[in-house]
Image 1 (tube, rainbow, N blue to C red):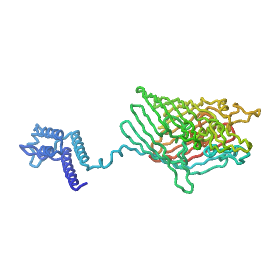
Image 2: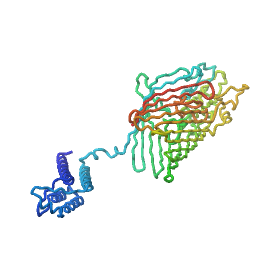
Image 3: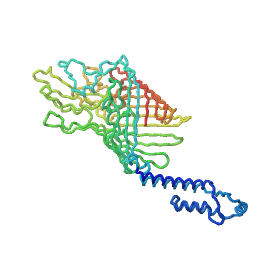
Image 4: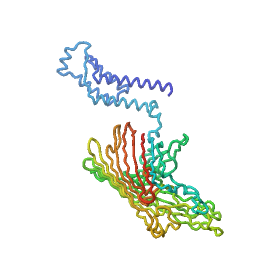
Length: 575
Protein backbone atom coordinates (compact mmCIF):
# COMPACT_ATOMS: atom_id res chain seq x y z
CA UNK A 1 0.00 0.00 0.00
CA UNK A 2 1.43 3.45 -1.00
CA UNK A 3 1.82 6.34 1.43
CA UNK A 4 -0.92 8.34 -0.34
CA UNK A 5 -3.28 5.38 -0.05
CA UNK A 6 -2.44 5.11 3.64
CA UNK A 7 -3.29 8.76 4.18
CA UNK A 8 -6.53 8.31 2.22
CA UNK A 9 -7.48 5.30 4.34
CA UNK A 10 -6.79 7.18 7.56
CA UNK A 11 -8.78 10.23 6.44
CA UNK A 12 -11.70 8.08 5.37
CA UNK A 13 -11.71 6.01 8.52
CA UNK A 14 -11.33 9.12 10.73
CA UNK A 15 -14.19 10.90 8.95
CA UNK A 16 -16.41 7.79 9.09
CA UNK A 17 -15.58 7.13 12.72
CA UNK A 18 -16.36 10.73 13.72
CA UNK A 19 -19.60 10.70 11.76
CA UNK A 20 -20.59 7.36 13.18
CA UNK A 21 -19.76 8.41 16.71
CA UNK A 22 -21.66 11.69 16.51
CA UNK A 23 -24.76 10.19 14.96
CA UNK A 24 -24.88 7.20 17.30
CA UNK A 25 -24.32 9.38 20.36
CA UNK A 26 -27.05 11.75 19.26
CA UNK A 27 -29.35 8.90 18.28
CA UNK A 28 -28.88 7.11 21.56
CA UNK A 29 -29.68 10.09 23.66
CA UNK A 30 -26.73 12.53 23.41
CA UNK A 31 -27.10 16.33 24.17
CA UNK A 32 -28.52 18.62 21.48
CA UNK A 33 -28.07 22.34 22.21
CA UNK A 34 -31.24 24.20 21.37
CA UNK A 35 -31.00 27.68 19.91
CA UNK A 36 -33.96 29.97 20.24
CA UNK A 37 -35.64 31.06 17.03
CA UNK A 38 -33.42 28.91 14.76
CA UNK A 39 -32.50 25.41 13.84
CA UNK A 40 -31.31 23.16 16.62
CA UNK A 41 -27.69 22.02 16.79
CA UNK A 42 -28.87 18.46 16.05
CA UNK A 43 -30.54 19.52 12.77
CA UNK A 44 -27.43 21.42 11.69
CA UNK A 45 -25.24 18.42 12.47
CA UNK A 46 -27.48 16.14 10.45
CA UNK A 47 -27.42 18.52 7.48
CA UNK A 48 -23.65 18.76 7.72
CA UNK A 49 -23.24 14.99 7.75
CA UNK A 50 -25.52 14.72 4.72
CA UNK A 51 -23.53 17.36 2.84
CA UNK A 52 -20.25 15.56 3.61
CA UNK A 53 -21.59 12.23 2.35
CA UNK A 54 -21.24 10.51 5.71
CA UNK A 55 -25.03 10.03 5.79
CA UNK A 56 -27.14 8.86 2.87
CA UNK A 57 -30.01 11.13 1.92
CA UNK A 58 -32.56 8.56 3.04
CA UNK A 59 -31.09 8.12 6.52
CA UNK A 60 -30.51 11.86 6.87
CA UNK A 61 -34.09 12.74 5.92
CA UNK A 62 -35.41 10.26 8.48
CA UNK A 63 -33.34 11.93 11.20
CA UNK A 64 -34.39 15.44 10.08
CA UNK A 65 -38.07 14.57 10.21
CA UNK A 66 -37.65 13.11 13.69
CA UNK A 67 -35.73 16.16 14.90
CA UNK A 68 -38.23 18.57 13.39
CA UNK A 69 -41.16 16.76 15.00
CA UNK A 70 -39.46 17.01 18.36
CA UNK A 71 -38.81 20.71 17.76
CA UNK A 72 -42.55 21.49 17.34
CA UNK A 73 -43.82 22.98 20.58
CA UNK A 74 -46.43 20.88 22.34
CA UNK A 75 -48.25 21.98 25.46
CA UNK A 76 -45.85 20.02 27.54
CA UNK A 77 -42.93 21.24 25.48
CA UNK A 78 -44.09 24.87 25.72
CA UNK A 79 -44.34 24.59 29.48
CA UNK A 80 -40.95 23.07 29.65
CA UNK A 81 -39.56 25.70 27.30
CA UNK A 82 -40.91 28.55 29.41
CA UNK A 83 -39.02 27.27 32.41
CA UNK A 84 -35.89 26.27 30.55
CA UNK A 85 -32.73 28.06 31.48
CA UNK A 86 -29.76 28.92 29.33
CA UNK A 87 -27.52 25.93 28.87
CA UNK A 88 -30.32 23.36 29.34
CA UNK A 89 -30.27 20.45 26.85
CA UNK A 90 -33.09 18.60 25.26
CA UNK A 91 -32.89 14.84 24.50
CA UNK A 92 -35.04 13.67 21.55
CA UNK A 93 -35.98 9.99 20.96
CA UNK A 94 -34.60 8.19 17.87
CA UNK A 95 -36.26 4.82 17.06
CA UNK A 96 -34.04 1.74 17.29
CA UNK A 97 -34.75 0.84 13.67
CA UNK A 98 -33.32 4.19 12.53
CA UNK A 99 -30.21 3.70 14.68
CA UNK A 100 -29.65 0.22 13.23
CA UNK A 101 -30.12 1.50 9.69
CA UNK A 102 -27.57 4.28 10.22
CA UNK A 103 -25.01 1.87 11.68
CA UNK A 104 -25.47 -0.69 8.89
CA UNK A 105 -25.29 1.89 6.10
CA UNK A 106 -22.13 3.46 7.51
CA UNK A 107 -20.49 0.05 7.88
CA UNK A 108 -21.46 -0.94 4.33
CA UNK A 109 -20.18 2.38 2.98
CA UNK A 110 -16.80 2.01 4.67
CA UNK A 111 -16.35 -1.64 3.58
CA UNK A 112 -17.44 -0.93 -0.02
CA UNK A 113 -14.96 1.94 -0.38
CA UNK A 114 -12.22 -0.15 1.28
CA UNK A 115 -12.78 -3.07 -1.09
CA UNK A 116 -13.03 -0.83 -4.16
CA UNK A 117 -9.70 0.83 -3.34
CA UNK A 118 -7.93 -2.37 -2.28
CA UNK A 119 -7.50 -1.28 1.34
CA UNK A 120 -9.22 -4.19 3.05
CA UNK A 121 -8.60 -7.95 3.34
CA UNK A 122 -11.17 -9.36 0.88
CA UNK A 123 -9.05 -8.55 -2.19
CA UNK A 124 -5.87 -9.74 -0.48
CA UNK A 125 -7.24 -13.36 -0.50
CA UNK A 126 -7.67 -14.83 -4.01
CA UNK A 127 -11.24 -15.72 -4.91
CA UNK A 128 -10.36 -19.36 -5.69
CA UNK A 129 -9.30 -19.99 -2.08
CA UNK A 130 -12.83 -19.20 -0.91
CA UNK A 131 -14.14 -22.07 -3.07
CA UNK A 132 -11.93 -24.74 -1.51
CA UNK A 133 -12.71 -27.00 1.46
CA UNK A 134 -10.01 -29.07 3.12
CA UNK A 135 -11.13 -32.39 4.62
CA UNK A 136 -9.18 -35.11 6.34
CA UNK A 137 -8.83 -37.58 9.18
CA UNK A 138 -6.13 -39.35 11.17
CA UNK A 139 -6.39 -42.70 12.94
CA UNK A 140 -3.91 -44.32 15.33
CA UNK A 141 -4.66 -48.00 16.04
CA UNK A 142 -3.28 -50.80 18.18
CA UNK A 143 -4.21 -54.18 16.70
CA UNK A 144 -3.85 -57.80 17.80
CA UNK A 145 -4.51 -60.87 15.61
CA UNK A 146 -5.15 -64.08 17.52
CA UNK A 147 -5.15 -67.51 15.85
CA UNK A 148 -6.35 -70.85 17.17
CA UNK A 149 -3.71 -73.52 17.70
CA UNK A 150 -6.07 -75.98 15.97
CA UNK A 151 -5.95 -74.06 12.69
CA UNK A 152 -4.57 -75.70 9.58
CA UNK A 153 -0.93 -74.83 8.91
CA UNK A 154 -1.22 -75.41 5.14
CA UNK A 155 -3.14 -72.38 3.88
CA UNK A 156 -1.71 -71.38 0.50
CA UNK A 157 -1.26 -67.67 -0.20
CA UNK A 158 -2.68 -67.73 -3.73
CA UNK A 159 -2.51 -63.94 -4.02
CA UNK A 160 1.29 -64.09 -3.75
CA UNK A 161 1.44 -66.84 -6.39
CA UNK A 162 -0.61 -64.74 -8.82
CA UNK A 163 1.56 -61.69 -8.15
CA UNK A 164 4.73 -63.66 -8.99
CA UNK A 165 5.76 -66.09 -11.69
CA UNK A 166 3.30 -68.80 -10.69
CA UNK A 167 3.86 -71.98 -8.68
CA UNK A 168 5.23 -75.17 -10.19
CA UNK A 169 2.70 -77.88 -9.32
CA UNK A 170 4.88 -80.68 -10.74
CA UNK A 171 6.37 -82.50 -7.73
CA UNK A 172 9.13 -83.93 -9.89
CA UNK A 173 10.55 -80.52 -10.75
CA UNK A 174 9.71 -78.54 -7.61
CA UNK A 175 9.73 -80.03 -4.12
CA UNK A 176 9.24 -76.83 -2.12
CA UNK A 177 6.00 -75.71 -0.55
CA UNK A 178 4.03 -72.84 -2.07
CA UNK A 179 3.92 -69.55 -0.14
CA UNK A 180 1.79 -70.14 2.98
CA UNK A 181 -0.16 -67.73 5.19
CA UNK A 182 0.45 -67.55 8.92
CA UNK A 183 -2.51 -69.30 10.47
CA UNK A 184 -1.37 -70.24 14.01
CA UNK A 185 1.03 -67.69 15.50
CA UNK A 186 -0.50 -64.62 17.17
CA UNK A 187 0.51 -61.11 16.15
CA UNK A 188 -0.08 -58.77 19.10
CA UNK A 189 0.20 -55.02 19.64
CA UNK A 190 0.86 -53.92 16.08
CA UNK A 191 0.72 -50.13 15.80
CA UNK A 192 -0.98 -48.92 12.64
CA UNK A 193 -2.07 -45.56 11.25
CA UNK A 194 -4.36 -44.17 8.60
CA UNK A 195 -4.19 -40.60 7.33
CA UNK A 196 -6.31 -39.08 4.58
CA UNK A 197 -6.19 -35.50 3.30
CA UNK A 198 -8.45 -34.15 0.58
CA UNK A 199 -9.55 -30.94 -1.08
CA UNK A 200 -13.00 -30.29 -2.57
CA UNK A 201 -13.43 -27.31 -4.92
CA UNK A 202 -16.70 -25.64 -5.94
CA UNK A 203 -15.94 -24.88 -9.59
CA UNK A 204 -19.26 -23.32 -10.46
CA UNK A 205 -22.94 -23.43 -9.73
CA UNK A 206 -23.24 -27.06 -10.82
CA UNK A 207 -19.73 -28.57 -10.78
CA UNK A 208 -17.27 -29.71 -8.13
CA UNK A 209 -13.91 -31.47 -8.08
CA UNK A 210 -12.06 -33.42 -5.42
CA UNK A 211 -8.60 -34.88 -4.83
CA UNK A 212 -7.55 -36.97 -1.81
CA UNK A 213 -4.32 -38.62 -0.69
CA UNK A 214 -4.16 -41.55 1.73
CA UNK A 215 -1.68 -43.87 3.42
CA UNK A 216 -1.54 -47.62 2.86
CA UNK A 217 0.77 -50.61 3.10
CA UNK A 218 0.28 -51.29 -0.62
CA UNK A 219 -1.96 -50.39 -3.53
CA UNK A 220 -4.67 -52.87 -2.48
CA UNK A 221 -8.15 -51.37 -2.76
CA UNK A 222 -9.70 -52.35 0.60
CA UNK A 223 -7.48 -50.68 3.21
CA UNK A 224 -5.69 -47.36 3.73
CA UNK A 225 -4.06 -48.60 6.94
CA UNK A 226 -0.27 -48.40 7.24
CA UNK A 227 1.66 -50.62 9.66
CA UNK A 228 4.32 -48.74 11.62
CA UNK A 229 7.83 -50.00 12.30
CA UNK A 230 9.87 -51.13 9.33
CA UNK A 231 13.06 -49.66 10.77
CA UNK A 232 11.33 -46.26 11.11
CA UNK A 233 11.23 -45.95 7.33
CA UNK A 234 9.05 -43.25 5.78
CA UNK A 235 5.53 -44.31 4.89
CA UNK A 236 3.84 -44.43 1.51
CA UNK A 237 1.14 -42.04 0.30
CA UNK A 238 -1.21 -42.96 -2.55
CA UNK A 239 -3.67 -41.11 -4.76
CA UNK A 240 -6.90 -42.22 -3.10
CA UNK A 241 -9.48 -40.10 -4.96
CA UNK A 242 -9.65 -37.80 -7.99
CA UNK A 243 -13.09 -36.91 -9.32
CA UNK A 244 -15.36 -34.40 -11.04
CA UNK A 245 -19.03 -33.98 -10.16
CA UNK A 246 -21.80 -32.34 -12.19
CA UNK A 247 -25.31 -31.62 -10.88
CA UNK A 248 -27.29 -30.43 -13.93
CA UNK A 249 -30.70 -30.54 -12.22
CA UNK A 250 -31.90 -30.73 -8.65
CA UNK A 251 -31.49 -34.19 -7.19
CA UNK A 252 -29.15 -35.56 -9.89
CA UNK A 253 -25.40 -35.89 -9.39
CA UNK A 254 -23.07 -37.33 -12.03
CA UNK A 255 -19.60 -38.16 -10.76
CA UNK A 256 -16.64 -39.51 -12.69
CA UNK A 257 -13.06 -40.47 -11.91
CA UNK A 258 -12.10 -42.20 -8.67
CA UNK A 259 -14.54 -41.51 -5.86
CA UNK A 260 -16.03 -42.91 -2.65
CA UNK A 261 -18.57 -45.74 -2.69
CA UNK A 262 -21.70 -44.35 -4.43
CA UNK A 263 -23.97 -47.14 -3.13
CA UNK A 264 -25.62 -47.51 0.25
CA UNK A 265 -23.97 -50.63 1.60
CA UNK A 266 -22.19 -52.21 4.55
CA UNK A 267 -18.66 -53.57 4.68
CA UNK A 268 -20.10 -57.07 4.17
CA UNK A 269 -19.95 -56.34 0.42
CA UNK A 270 -17.69 -53.29 0.06
CA UNK A 271 -14.95 -52.26 2.50
CA UNK A 272 -15.38 -48.84 4.12
CA UNK A 273 -12.04 -47.81 2.57
CA UNK A 274 -12.97 -48.97 -0.94
CA UNK A 275 -13.12 -46.31 -3.67
CA UNK A 276 -14.67 -46.78 -7.11
CA UNK A 277 -13.29 -45.98 -10.56
CA UNK A 278 -15.48 -45.02 -13.50
CA UNK A 279 -18.74 -43.07 -13.48
CA UNK A 280 -21.83 -43.06 -11.25
CA UNK A 281 -25.25 -41.43 -11.60
CA UNK A 282 -26.98 -40.65 -8.29
CA UNK A 283 -30.56 -39.39 -8.03
CA UNK A 284 -32.76 -38.46 -5.06
CA UNK A 285 -36.35 -37.21 -5.11
CA UNK A 286 -38.60 -36.23 -2.20
CA UNK A 287 -42.28 -37.13 -2.43
CA UNK A 288 -44.36 -34.45 -0.75
CA UNK A 289 -43.75 -33.21 2.78
CA UNK A 290 -44.38 -36.47 4.65
CA UNK A 291 -40.68 -37.40 5.00
CA UNK A 292 -40.65 -39.95 2.16
CA UNK A 293 -37.99 -39.88 -0.57
CA UNK A 294 -36.63 -42.18 -3.27
CA UNK A 295 -33.03 -42.62 -4.34
CA UNK A 296 -31.23 -44.53 -7.09
CA UNK A 297 -27.63 -45.12 -8.15
CA UNK A 298 -26.26 -46.47 -11.42
CA UNK A 299 -22.54 -47.21 -11.54
CA UNK A 300 -20.18 -48.32 -14.32
CA UNK A 301 -16.85 -49.41 -12.84
CA UNK A 302 -13.85 -50.75 -14.78
CA UNK A 303 -12.12 -53.34 -12.59
CA UNK A 304 -9.24 -54.37 -14.87
CA UNK A 305 -8.05 -53.83 -18.42
CA UNK A 306 -5.90 -56.44 -20.09
CA UNK A 307 -2.46 -55.16 -21.01
CA UNK A 308 -2.39 -53.28 -24.30
CA UNK A 309 0.76 -55.13 -25.34
CA UNK A 310 -0.05 -58.64 -24.09
CA UNK A 311 1.74 -60.90 -24.81
CA UNK A 312 4.83 -58.73 -24.75
CA UNK A 313 7.09 -61.32 -26.39
CA UNK A 314 4.80 -62.09 -29.32
CA UNK A 315 4.12 -60.24 -32.56
CA UNK A 316 0.51 -61.36 -32.33
CA UNK A 317 -1.34 -59.46 -29.61
CA UNK A 318 -4.52 -60.67 -27.98
CA UNK A 319 -7.82 -58.84 -28.12
CA UNK A 320 -8.84 -56.59 -25.25
CA UNK A 321 -10.23 -58.44 -22.23
CA UNK A 322 -11.82 -56.06 -19.75
CA UNK A 323 -13.44 -56.72 -16.38
CA UNK A 324 -16.34 -54.57 -15.17
CA UNK A 325 -18.68 -54.04 -12.27
CA UNK A 326 -22.06 -52.68 -13.34
CA UNK A 327 -24.33 -51.81 -10.43
CA UNK A 328 -27.88 -50.56 -10.00
CA UNK A 329 -29.47 -49.78 -6.63
CA UNK A 330 -32.87 -48.26 -5.84
CA UNK A 331 -34.22 -47.47 -2.40
CA UNK A 332 -36.37 -45.29 -0.20
CA UNK A 333 -36.07 -43.26 3.00
CA UNK A 334 -39.06 -42.72 5.27
CA UNK A 335 -39.16 -40.57 8.38
CA UNK A 336 -42.38 -40.90 10.35
CA UNK A 337 -43.92 -40.77 13.80
CA UNK A 338 -41.68 -39.64 16.63
CA UNK A 339 -38.44 -39.36 14.63
CA UNK A 340 -38.71 -42.93 13.38
CA UNK A 341 -36.48 -43.57 10.34
CA UNK A 342 -36.67 -46.43 7.91
CA UNK A 343 -34.37 -47.03 4.93
CA UNK A 344 -34.50 -49.90 2.44
CA UNK A 345 -32.71 -50.61 -0.83
CA UNK A 346 -32.36 -53.40 -3.35
CA UNK A 347 -29.38 -53.66 -5.68
CA UNK A 348 -28.04 -55.73 -8.55
CA UNK A 349 -24.26 -55.96 -9.04
CA UNK A 350 -22.97 -57.69 -12.16
CA UNK A 351 -19.25 -58.54 -12.06
CA UNK A 352 -18.55 -59.11 -15.75
CA UNK A 353 -15.72 -61.25 -17.13
CA UNK A 354 -14.01 -61.81 -13.77
CA UNK A 355 -14.20 -65.63 -13.75
CA UNK A 356 -11.08 -67.59 -14.67
CA UNK A 357 -10.52 -69.02 -18.13
CA UNK A 358 -8.65 -72.19 -19.00
CA UNK A 359 -5.95 -71.42 -21.54
CA UNK A 360 -5.06 -72.83 -24.91
CA UNK A 361 -2.11 -75.26 -24.76
CA UNK A 362 1.06 -73.31 -24.03
CA UNK A 363 4.56 -74.75 -24.57
CA UNK A 364 6.42 -73.15 -21.71
CA UNK A 365 9.10 -75.82 -22.02
CA UNK A 366 9.92 -74.47 -25.51
CA UNK A 367 10.57 -70.94 -24.28
CA UNK A 368 7.08 -69.39 -24.16
CA UNK A 369 6.65 -67.11 -21.16
CA UNK A 370 2.86 -66.76 -21.14
CA UNK A 371 -0.39 -68.62 -21.62
CA UNK A 372 -3.52 -67.20 -23.28
CA UNK A 373 -5.53 -67.00 -20.03
CA UNK A 374 -2.95 -65.27 -17.84
CA UNK A 375 -5.03 -62.08 -18.05
CA UNK A 376 -7.93 -63.77 -16.21
CA UNK A 377 -6.16 -64.09 -12.85
CA UNK A 378 -7.46 -61.46 -10.40
CA UNK A 379 -5.38 -58.33 -9.91
CA UNK A 380 -6.29 -58.43 -6.21
CA UNK A 381 -7.75 -61.13 -3.97
CA UNK A 382 -8.09 -61.83 -0.25
CA UNK A 383 -9.26 -65.36 0.50
CA UNK A 384 -12.32 -67.63 0.49
CA UNK A 385 -13.47 -67.90 -3.15
CA UNK A 386 -13.27 -71.21 -5.01
CA UNK A 387 -10.15 -71.14 -7.23
CA UNK A 388 -9.16 -73.05 -10.36
CA UNK A 389 -5.91 -73.59 -12.27
CA UNK A 390 -5.68 -71.41 -15.38
CA UNK A 391 -2.88 -72.81 -17.52
CA UNK A 392 -3.12 -75.70 -19.97
CA UNK A 393 0.62 -76.45 -19.98
CA UNK A 394 1.87 -78.69 -22.81
CA UNK A 395 4.25 -81.46 -21.76
CA UNK A 396 7.73 -81.77 -23.20
CA UNK A 397 7.52 -84.88 -25.42
CA UNK A 398 11.18 -85.67 -24.70
CA UNK A 399 10.67 -85.66 -20.90
CA UNK A 400 6.98 -85.29 -20.00
CA UNK A 401 7.37 -86.33 -16.36
CA UNK A 402 9.87 -83.55 -15.70
CA UNK A 403 8.08 -80.68 -17.47
CA UNK A 404 7.86 -77.63 -15.14
CA UNK A 405 4.23 -76.52 -14.68
CA UNK A 406 4.10 -73.01 -13.15
CA UNK A 407 0.44 -72.27 -12.53
CA UNK A 408 -1.73 -69.23 -11.86
CA UNK A 409 -5.23 -69.43 -10.36
CA UNK A 410 -8.51 -67.69 -11.14
CA UNK A 411 -12.08 -67.55 -9.84
CA UNK A 412 -14.13 -70.65 -10.61
CA UNK A 413 -17.50 -68.91 -10.15
CA UNK A 414 -19.18 -66.04 -11.88
CA UNK A 415 -20.81 -63.33 -9.75
CA UNK A 416 -24.19 -61.64 -10.24
CA UNK A 417 -25.32 -60.35 -6.86
CA UNK A 418 -28.82 -59.59 -5.62
CA UNK A 419 -28.32 -57.24 -2.67
CA UNK A 420 -30.86 -56.20 0.00
CA UNK A 421 -30.25 -53.58 2.71
CA UNK A 422 -32.57 -52.52 5.53
CA UNK A 423 -32.10 -50.13 8.47
CA UNK A 424 -34.51 -48.82 11.14
CA UNK A 425 -33.81 -46.11 13.73
CA UNK A 426 -35.95 -45.18 16.72
CA UNK A 427 -35.39 -42.76 19.61
CA UNK A 428 -35.51 -44.28 23.09
CA UNK A 429 -34.84 -42.11 26.15
CA UNK A 430 -32.49 -39.37 27.38
CA UNK A 431 -31.33 -38.63 23.85
CA UNK A 432 -30.35 -42.25 23.13
CA UNK A 433 -31.53 -44.19 20.09
CA UNK A 434 -31.49 -47.68 18.62
CA UNK A 435 -30.58 -48.68 15.08
CA UNK A 436 -31.18 -52.17 13.65
CA UNK A 437 -29.52 -53.12 10.35
CA UNK A 438 -29.72 -56.10 8.05
CA UNK A 439 -27.83 -56.89 4.84
CA UNK A 440 -28.39 -59.93 2.63
CA UNK A 441 -26.58 -61.01 -0.55
CA UNK A 442 -27.24 -63.89 -2.98
CA UNK A 443 -24.99 -64.80 -5.90
CA UNK A 444 -27.44 -65.56 -8.70
CA UNK A 445 -24.65 -66.87 -10.96
CA UNK A 446 -23.43 -69.55 -8.55
CA UNK A 447 -23.54 -72.91 -10.36
CA UNK A 448 -21.41 -75.90 -9.30
CA UNK A 449 -21.79 -77.62 -12.67
CA UNK A 450 -20.67 -74.51 -14.56
CA UNK A 451 -17.73 -74.10 -12.18
CA UNK A 452 -16.66 -77.71 -12.76
CA UNK A 453 -16.81 -77.30 -16.55
CA UNK A 454 -14.85 -74.07 -16.40
CA UNK A 455 -12.11 -75.56 -14.22
CA UNK A 456 -10.72 -78.01 -16.75
CA UNK A 457 -7.34 -77.87 -15.06
CA UNK A 458 -8.81 -78.61 -11.66
CA UNK A 459 -10.34 -76.95 -8.56
CA UNK A 460 -7.71 -76.13 -5.91
CA UNK A 461 -9.80 -74.70 -3.01
CA UNK A 462 -13.16 -75.54 -1.40
CA UNK A 463 -13.12 -79.10 -2.73
CA UNK A 464 -14.28 -81.81 -0.34
CA UNK A 465 -13.00 -85.37 -0.44
CA UNK A 466 -15.13 -87.43 -2.80
CA UNK A 467 -17.00 -90.30 -1.17
CA UNK A 468 -16.18 -92.70 -4.00
CA UNK A 469 -12.73 -91.29 -4.74
CA UNK A 470 -13.88 -89.60 -7.98
CA UNK A 471 -14.49 -85.88 -7.47
CA UNK A 472 -17.32 -84.08 -9.22
CA UNK A 473 -19.25 -80.80 -9.08
CA UNK A 474 -21.21 -82.06 -6.08
CA UNK A 475 -17.95 -82.01 -4.08
CA UNK A 476 -17.41 -78.24 -4.44
CA UNK A 477 -17.79 -77.21 -0.81
CA UNK A 478 -19.12 -73.68 -1.21
CA UNK A 479 -22.25 -71.54 -1.01
CA UNK A 480 -23.98 -68.52 -2.55
CA UNK A 481 -25.42 -66.61 0.45
CA UNK A 482 -24.10 -63.89 2.78
CA UNK A 483 -25.84 -61.87 5.45
CA UNK A 484 -25.19 -59.49 8.32
CA UNK A 485 -27.31 -58.30 11.27
CA UNK A 486 -26.30 -55.51 13.65
CA UNK A 487 -27.79 -53.49 16.52
CA UNK A 488 -26.38 -50.10 17.61
CA UNK A 489 -27.41 -48.28 20.80
CA UNK A 490 -26.49 -44.84 22.14
CA UNK A 491 -25.80 -41.65 20.21
CA UNK A 492 -25.99 -42.94 16.65
CA UNK A 493 -24.00 -39.96 15.33
CA UNK A 494 -21.13 -38.81 17.55
CA UNK A 495 -21.28 -34.99 17.50
CA UNK A 496 -19.86 -33.65 20.78
CA UNK A 497 -17.70 -34.62 23.73
CA UNK A 498 -19.44 -37.19 25.90
CA UNK A 499 -21.38 -38.88 23.08
CA UNK A 500 -21.02 -42.66 22.89
CA UNK A 501 -22.50 -45.74 21.29
CA UNK A 502 -22.01 -49.49 21.24
CA UNK A 503 -22.84 -52.19 18.71
CA UNK A 504 -23.18 -55.94 18.37
CA UNK A 505 -23.41 -57.89 15.13
CA UNK A 506 -23.14 -61.23 13.37
CA UNK A 507 -21.89 -62.10 9.86
CA UNK A 508 -21.96 -65.17 7.68
CA UNK A 509 -20.29 -65.11 4.26
CA UNK A 510 -20.36 -68.33 2.25
CA UNK A 511 -17.37 -68.96 0.01
CA UNK A 512 -18.79 -67.79 -3.34
CA UNK A 513 -21.53 -65.44 -2.16
CA UNK A 514 -19.48 -62.47 -3.40
CA UNK A 515 -15.98 -61.73 -4.75
CA UNK A 516 -13.53 -61.92 -1.84
CA UNK A 517 -11.47 -59.00 -3.16
CA UNK A 518 -13.56 -56.01 -2.09
CA UNK A 519 -15.14 -56.53 1.35
CA UNK A 520 -13.94 -55.68 4.87
CA UNK A 521 -10.31 -56.61 5.52
CA UNK A 522 -10.71 -56.81 9.33
CA UNK A 523 -13.37 -59.47 9.95
CA UNK A 524 -11.56 -62.85 9.62
CA UNK A 525 -8.81 -60.68 8.04
CA UNK A 526 -10.83 -60.27 4.88
CA UNK A 527 -12.56 -62.38 2.27
CA UNK A 528 -15.34 -64.96 2.42
CA UNK A 529 -15.95 -68.45 3.85
CA UNK A 530 -16.27 -66.91 7.32
CA UNK A 531 -18.85 -66.58 10.08
CA UNK A 532 -18.86 -65.07 13.56
CA UNK A 533 -19.81 -62.15 15.77
CA UNK A 534 -18.32 -58.74 16.46
CA UNK A 535 -18.90 -56.03 19.05
CA UNK A 536 -17.52 -52.59 19.78
CA UNK A 537 -18.00 -49.17 21.30
CA UNK A 538 -17.03 -45.57 20.56
CA UNK A 539 -16.71 -42.59 22.90
CA UNK A 540 -16.11 -38.99 21.81
CA UNK A 541 -13.82 -37.38 24.39
CA UNK A 542 -13.13 -34.12 22.53
CA UNK A 543 -14.55 -32.23 19.60
CA UNK A 544 -14.06 -34.39 16.48
CA UNK A 545 -11.91 -36.92 18.39
CA UNK A 546 -13.17 -40.34 19.51
CA UNK A 547 -11.90 -43.56 21.04
CA UNK A 548 -13.10 -46.86 19.53
CA UNK A 549 -12.58 -50.46 20.58
CA UNK A 550 -13.83 -53.54 18.71
CA UNK A 551 -13.55 -57.32 18.96
CA UNK A 552 -14.19 -59.65 16.01
CA UNK A 553 -14.33 -63.44 16.45
CA UNK A 554 -14.69 -65.48 13.24
CA UNK A 555 -14.00 -68.92 11.85
CA UNK A 556 -14.38 -70.87 8.62
CA UNK A 557 -17.74 -72.15 7.35
CA UNK A 558 -16.33 -75.06 5.38
CA UNK A 559 -12.93 -76.64 4.91
CA UNK A 560 -9.87 -76.79 7.18
CA UNK A 561 -10.03 -75.07 10.62
CA UNK A 562 -9.30 -71.35 10.42
CA UNK A 563 -10.34 -69.38 13.52
CA UNK A 564 -9.12 -65.76 13.68
CA UNK A 565 -9.95 -63.21 16.39
CA UNK A 566 -9.07 -59.54 15.92
CA UNK A 567 -8.93 -56.83 18.60
CA UNK A 568 -8.53 -53.16 17.71
CA UNK A 569 -8.24 -50.07 19.92
CA UNK A 570 -7.96 -46.78 18.09
CA UNK A 571 -8.25 -43.00 18.27
CA UNK A 572 -9.96 -41.28 15.34
CA UNK A 573 -9.75 -37.56 14.62
CA UNK A 574 -11.48 -35.74 11.77
CA UNK A 575 -11.09 -32.21 10.44
